[in-house]
Length: 251
Image (tube, rainbow, N blue to C red; front, side):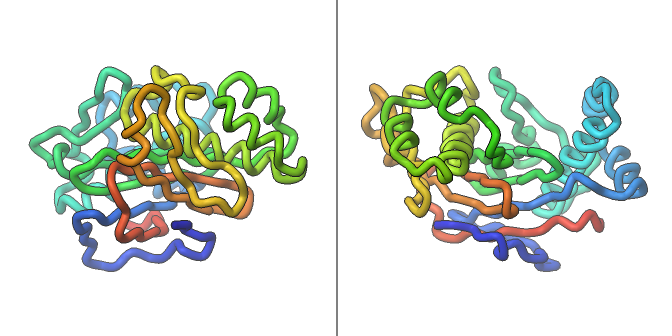
């Protein structure tokens, strides 16, 4: 399953999320000053403190938009005010809603790169998302040698040179989305599991070292958020329905 560049639509007025359904929101981090101020007012005290720690205004505003948009989007599903949402964090830093606000049911994950963020949402199962910008000048083979598995390195080097950059970042998003979904971050070594990466090949978790049944538990979904970016959603179980929404900043 691939969510293409033209898949991002305006959400319906009455937003519902069914079991086995996944919603992914594309958020532009370049918002107006009035939108930025409105979003900042919805943040918690600790989120505002974290925003102030950013040295550069651009980083500060992007953090405010990503966290504010997350709050506004979650509030639509929960029908409560965005500013009263509260989050818990697991030992590896993955956020979730507190149990009293549906944290055991509504699951989400956020990733951002450049001036875009993606927010993936589902129910009753773990989910992770990652977005990366394709950089043709990045030392892909050198970094892959350090972090990718032997199989992934072999596959990457077998591709024509002009495809290697896109394949590298595609691979990276699939690996990051999986470890974010599991909720243990980089405590899971990236070279201890394999994902697909060849252009045109379906997104998939192929193998997890020392756990042969793990790969069958997960679905990976390729997203194309823009012409120069790649992204992946990883979710426990199957994905019977995917919707991709464009967040407009209007709320």
